[in-house]
Length: 241
Image (cartoon, rainbow, N blue to C red; front, side, top):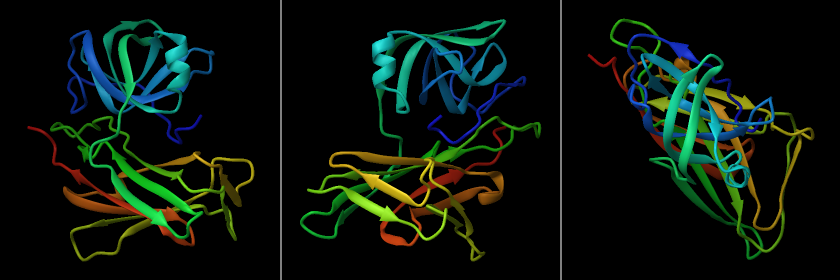
């Protein structure tokens, strides 16, 4: 599964998530293959359906379109119903979209080596808890990508299994929160991006990375390769009244 994040259904009386209890909804999430062989939408920002917060929707729709959009971040409109096996989404319209607040860095190291690096915080406005103190169900993540627009494949060789280096810093003078992640591939010490190809990796944003309300700046790069860094911002908001 490309999205390195476990999204599970949650139940509560109220939510700070996307959508309303109405069955006609528009959602933002990732198209993924389900273990059953079908399709699902993984929602970092939970959807509220009939008083329940859900982060995972089983999708019914055009199989060819879903295949083209696999692992992509999409905006989808349709109708959702709660069934014994979980929430089911009947997709009427779906298309890839760029997350709000995406940061971009253009890399031009030579005539042959050029790339576009992007970083998104999804969602870029986070509420960890509801007014009653219960978890909101939000499961935010960072999406980092490198698009090769040069004239030759780009190859990275790493000294350790640490491939993606993440730093999150708030407005205060405190120390940034940092972590490093391995590559989501079998060969974790080498990455090759073919001509026109894209490398994409995800990193969860845990509550300890941004515990207090305020604005945060996050910087992500391939470990030891500072030229391929990108930055973006997100906001942590207090519980809604």
